Length: 136
Image 1 (cartoon, rainbow, N blue to C red):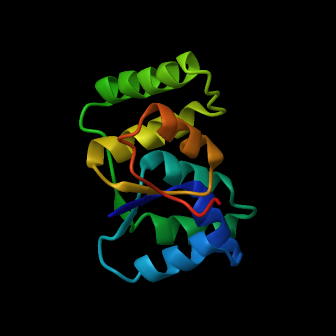
Image 2 (cartoon, rainbow, N blue to C red):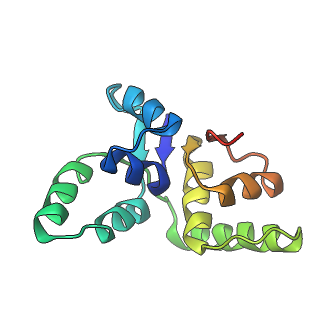
């Protein structure tokens, strides 16, 4: 089971060739293998460049498996703790959204598929974050 980050979906939508997109292409055909969060859904929709593109993205992504928080307040506190833990270890996370996405992966015990170096750095402070990426 994979939580697929926006960083992979954007390249997938654009048709960009990469190892992450190739991997995603394989798992999207497997039922329940790939999912998103509400936040990833929002980020994808924000990238639409026209009304028709927005509608196409909405139609496709609204039918995907969604991983969600059971307790929003506790999950947001945990995501803030994750950010705080990284900062205390000298790791700068550029987006608090990434902490929420990582927290959702942790809570749902799924592998985070991404192309974002911030998650790699985050993993140094939070080793229990399961990740799949294609950085060398």
